[in-house]
Image (cartoon, rainbow, N blue to C red; front, side, top):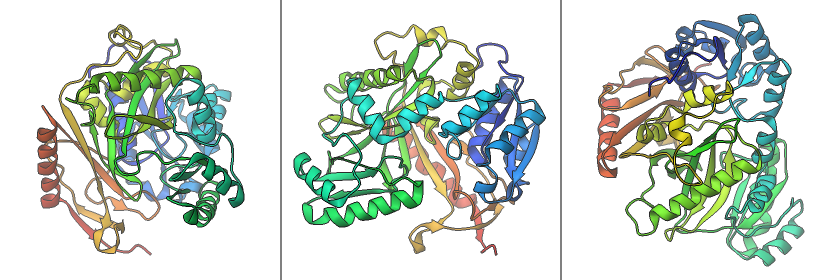
Length: 443
């Protein structure tokens, strides 16, 4: 994954922390781009801070007072001379107001336009756009639903089971399934309350719950440049989840690979992802997510307008550095000729082998996998020849109550699915042997 040219920016700021900040810095530094870290007071000794060329404290431990402070981050860009911001994922990565403010200050945002984020980040609006673009969608009500009585009437027309989702939602919050009419009223009320509490937005989307027994979470990674070129990558499957949060991801999906008609269905899904992105003038990295059944019927779920946590599995099977491509796109470059020249409407990147990512969390299985906080007294990653480990910690790092408890991601590659999963199991065993977490409640 060597850089294909000279540096594009002199300096960029990474508006994030932990493993994704480290990940972005690795590519930037390889490309000869200096990096600026931001950090909260709790992260002053974090790996991403020491790794950066410069670091700026943006506030106290709580993310609302530090990593989400737009004006402080912009001031950090001005003070350090950073020409662009890579937001990573989470925090401000899908905040259109942040992208707009950066544009006003003539600072680059390594992501899509605010227009694309606004249109694809809202589930009701994105469904409308998807249907108009010819993307396969499940039967639904086209509009916002505010009252239980309306939800009951709409559900009768659509047919059960139905799923109710927060229009502004994510991470499984504000979501309920009603299998029959007797479950709808309570489910709708709870979903709406959770949506309001989590996102400050109680608008609800109602649609048919397709694939209730054999549903698979399939997503298409796509990158577009500012010249109208697109490339798609092999799909990722993220069906193994806990509490609606992904824990194991792989690429490609066993749903398509080696199955009759699988290659054609994959190409159809990729082509629809491009159609959707073209309809909003999308550029940078993004992921179009679908729900698919065992017969390979698929339906649009949503689009994530940022880099995904699971992007390493795509990099491992394609040999492309997605962060590098994002940086080049933001600088105004076209996608490399090797990608623009790919055949077909989806310009699908070739891939080889299989990759698996497992997430390592600081959680207590005896307490329902609730986060565990404390300090790492020892940390030894699997050897590089065994696994790619994306992490933002080191011995002595604290697992804080203020942030996500994910410690690292273990990514393994194999010639086929069995080989990739076997390698991942060995890598996880290595972590168990050498990874010591002392759980101590921080007061």
